[in-house]
Image 1 (cartoon, rainbow, N blue to C red):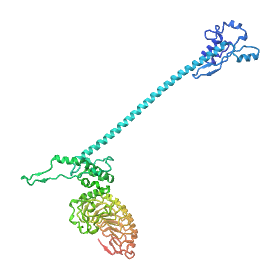
Image 2 (cartoon, helix red, strand yellow; image 1 turned 90 degrees about the horizontal axis):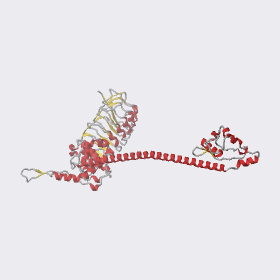
Image 3 (cartoon, rainbow, N blue to C red; image 1 turned 120 degrees about the horizontal axis):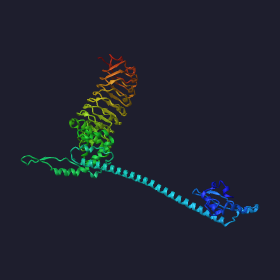
Image 4 (cartoon, rainbow, N blue to C red; image 1 turned 180 degrees about the vertical axis):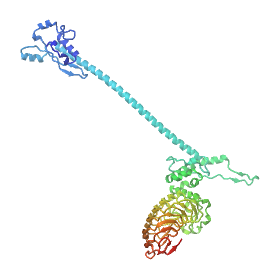
Length: 542
């Protein structure tokens, strides 16, 4: 067909492709189907026979680069013969067609090459971009790792410096002298779990001996260089003992550990005594803790001023007792019990009895008494103890007898007493206790004797004491108690002695407590002018 009559030929594909196809079919020219192309002018073309007219069949498809190209060109002779036309339609009739197909193939190849080049360029650019991105990620990762390693190194150096500083501080001025406060830094895990016995070297304080041959009686003492050599020789061993003891104390009593920094405290004095024990490395951890707690008790209750003459002689019973804080077995330390019952430890060396009656104890009960968890008996009555009862006494869950009566103890009754479920005797009378009676004492349902007389107790009588079904002796006289006697107290079926006189109680005595109805009641005392007690065995009047 005449290209001039094909108005929409430009819509068939890439215009440059169309022009190339037109030049191939119509001859050389300006590249467009003009009068000069296709073999002559328009008049000349008009003279050609119809059979010479050609038809362009264009199949469009997309290459990978997105360009449109002509895939197949076929021409056929326009004829009235349909069979010939069909044959001509499917058969190339000119070498120009093959040339055209080759050109198309070349164009396709060129387009593919251009696409490949563009794709390669795009892939290369993407690769470089990927490398750049990953390069920064790698750099950032390396920076983070480097900072982490620097932080770890700084922490390690800090701990090493603190450990060395503590070691050198504890090494200076050792011997028998008290350690400095730097010994008591919270080591938090840097303390070794145990100290090798083979490294221990016992220490002794340098002593002065007068030279009697000297006319001036000038005492001769060890030279400073000799003392320094001895201290240097013993410093590593003492430092190891100190660290081991600090570990044991810190695991059991943080408050005790905090008191070690002051050389005036009983805790520091006990600490300094035990680190110079020549047998330290042969002890178990339980024995070390036990000896430390007893040493704290000794210094806290004025041990150097105890009336040691009140300790009985037990040599006739085969027991060779030793003074307190001697470097001997603590199970052989002096006690106020006589005869074979003077034993204070069981067969495993655990302290079960602390019997120190009327030996002049003064000062306060230390919190460290709660470390003696194997205790079953504490007799410290008839002394001059002051201060309050430490709450840590509630840790003595095996305790059966506690007598602190006839002292000067003040403050409140700790509710932790309710944790002593094995308690049978609780004697706190004749002190200066000034709180209410904690209801938790009702938990001690094995109590046989409860003495709270001659104090300054206030408040109401707790109903929970009715749980004390085994109670035989209840003394509450001479206090400031108020309210009424709980009716449930009639359930104390074994009560024999009950005294509540010299208080501010009102109401009436429960009928179940009267000797007439109470099987075991023998002695019932009350303020008969304040409380209705028609069955009391003894009445008091203000």
